[in-house]
Length: 72
Image (tube, rainbow, N blue to C red; front, side):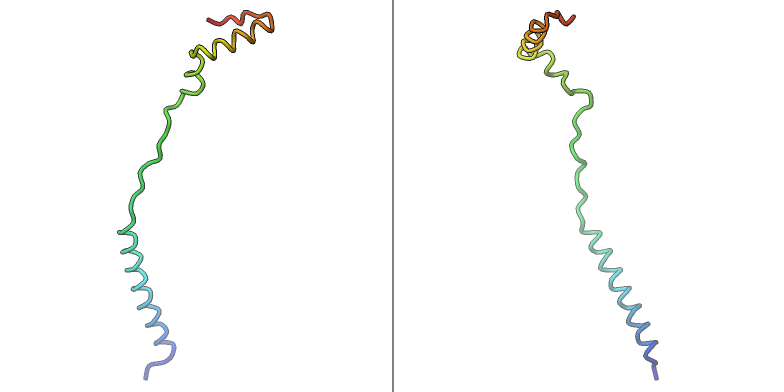
């Protein structure tokens, strides 16, 4: 006659096998996400420094301070 302990051990092993198979199936169905978009490094404010509106603001600030700024 099978003991209660042996029945529980058998149930545990069967559950482990079923759970392992389910995990493998789920892992196989997962989609791999694309890498996140990365902006090129170093762009920062450099794109704005050549813009006419930015130059106008800098020149206005320099004029208010009485400074030529040494730019452009």
